[in-house]
Length: 113
Length: 113
Image 1: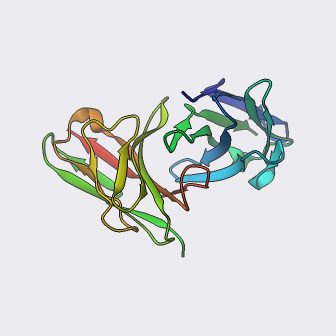
Image 2: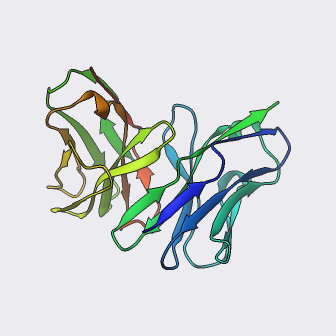
Image 3: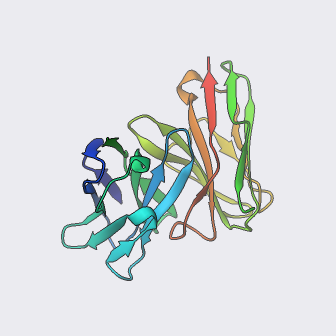
């Protein structure tokens, strides 16, 4: 069975410093992986996705993620945090065996001025 | 405008009173699904539908029903709501299955007293 673990429930960084949100997954085959963002009192939006093409994936708003099969990781990074990045971020794996998406518990990103 | 709409956005009801949350998409998407979001648990899939007349259970289907009579609509039915169904509910759709970007509705906040 597929599973997703987001290693930090909260991450706090200062504005202008790098962001790292960690995600590990388990999958019995080559997965599709996604990061979604949810701003306060807003809906969910796709940040980026990996579907077995390039292992370094670029998304919106300067975010990127690297698929590392050997480490079963798909960490999300951004070189310089902005106040508008404050939100909750979800790592998601696609389970093709049953057409379901498996969601991590989420990481709340806090940006300090 | 391409979108997923949900109604109502907010609902307070009492235990046992049947209710329906509607979901409609205008993008001709095949795949639709319902999630509930609870603090610290991420999103959990309730039901999904690969296409018209085909639905299947997600991870937390107990106490919920769905139907997919038309491609664009995927209502969520709570026959006899209970307080443990108090949650934030999201409907989502995608072109075809879980390898594609999910488009989310704005959410329905349900309180069952």
